[in-house]
Image (tube, rainbow, N blue to C red):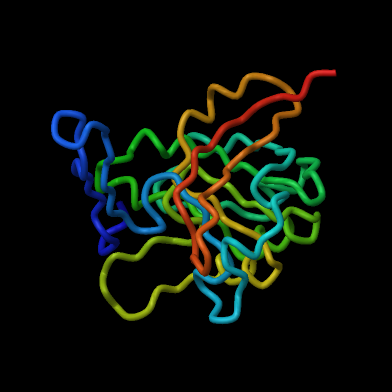
Length: 202
């Protein structure tokens, strides 16, 4: 969980023993676990989850290996320039930082510079996906509103950000597609998703 976000909880609402069927009640924020940020997350007039085209959530992907970087190191334009990014597709940044989930170190993740994000957007990328909690540097010092320049650039382009991916090392096949479909909640600023990489045969 990002500090300060709603803490997820679940409890039985109905049970087979009493009502004859099971129903689970869940409470969670829109940015719980692996999730999608819609433009409305950082832009007052940005598109909501239910207003985005489906190709933001299911798209061809290119993965760049950025592992073994030190804490709070910058991912720069030069780190991404040699990758053929799919226009209209997804850029997946594999930092390996998901191994730190559940520890304070998770929030000392590598981050994307605005110039590097602009390179992706100029290449036609509209889905930015990472195995970190944030493409921008995370500051937990309570020193005022969040500073989210990369979020702002992606939102302005009508794109989405996918955060907290895991197991990217298991994508060992060529030409992957990425599916990050959230629930289509009217007016939502984002939503948890089940992230899946797959290949299209034939």
